[in-house]
Amino acid sequence: MNWQLILTAMLPEHLLLVGMLAILGLEIKSGRPRDGFALAVLFTTAAAVAAFWLYATGFTGAPFLHHFSVGPVASLPKAVLLALAIPVLLISRDDFAETPYYTLVLASLYGACLIISSDSFPTLFLGIEIMSLPVYALVLLGLMRAQSVEAALKYLVLGGAATATLLMGIAFLYGWSGSLSISAFPFALASGDPLALAGVALVTAALFLKAAVVPFHAWAPDAYEGASAPVTAYMATIIKAGVLLAALRVFGTMPVVAPVAGLIAVLPLVSMAWGNLAAIRQTSFRRMIAYSSIAHAGYLFYALLGDGRGRWEAIVFYLIVYGLMNVLAFAALPRGADDERQDRLDALKGLYYRRPFAAMMIAIAMLSLAGLPPLPGFAAKFLVFKNVLAAGYTGYAVAGLVASYLGLYFYLRVIQYMFMAEQEPTAARGAPRRLAVVASVLCLVPAILLTFFPGWLIDRL
Image (cartoon, rainbow, N blue to C red; front, top):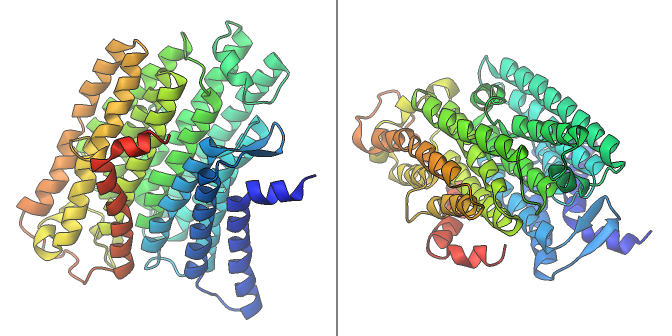
């Protein structure tokens, strides 16, 4: 076994593992609860830098042949995912000082990195579970409101259903192909064998459930609302990205044909429409973001209808932009002692007059998530629908564009509350949190760069 290859290829994962051990080791040694924030940020940053270094140097290697491999195609999204986790950790500082929170986040990130480099279904399954299991605890950890327990339980039960569905799909594919390699999935897509198509349908359904695509979305609104703001930001960005990157690994570059194309087109289309329509009626900011996330999952899965190269560009670019904007919104969001009250959209009324910077940051995030030019969200949606049109699915592309317009109302309503409504007398008025401002800037700078130079990133995907 080549230990040097293993150490180099899995350097980001090893750094996350060392970070977990360091945080737990210091607490065990001191014999009292410790704050793991600094170590979590340090090792996550180091892991992101290591992943980017692997990408920049063009490193390619397979330390575990047919199970785990690393190349520029895997290293870049891994670096992006870890970089997005840094501002999430920064906004967590005021809500969590305990070691368990940061250990769970690093463990979940380890699973996300494992997904991106997976070459076999056992490795992919382990990555998805390692990424997901800590989040069930994270939803409950804050216990910011009474429904946190119910939200965590619902997420756990439906997450378990997704796990069972995924395993059944893998079993069917193994029975058909005699292989546990992910490379068998694209061939199953083109097969007319009922066993192969059943495996494809079950694996796709499991990914839909993990990504909260309609009708497998019931867990998302409750989990997003019941969790603390940093955990909701983490679920909406890192977990969503991990699931979509798993879908990219599974579908590969093989064109999607009937009848699987219908499954990939219809349910995401319904997800776009229902997510945007349901978000209009929400009075909770996190619940609104949950339904927004359901709609965006539809856009992301829509990109799978296109060819291999186009779907890779569209999904990775979209995940970067979507992640930046969601974290920016949560970083700028004012928070107070009464979590349930501050989560209401009414609490944003008149925000511009008491916290202009926060209001402008949230407005930028909302406009970009709505897909309005010149913000990068427009380029992200353009790439998705361009990909669908290029694949010949004109009708689906038009229907998707119509569904996307439904989302304009609730995004603009947030802006109307902040800039045009009278201030709420019970709204939070404290000074902005320093780390939240830093997190906002970390998201704003790349968002501005992508607004003016989206081609720079697209050319490197």
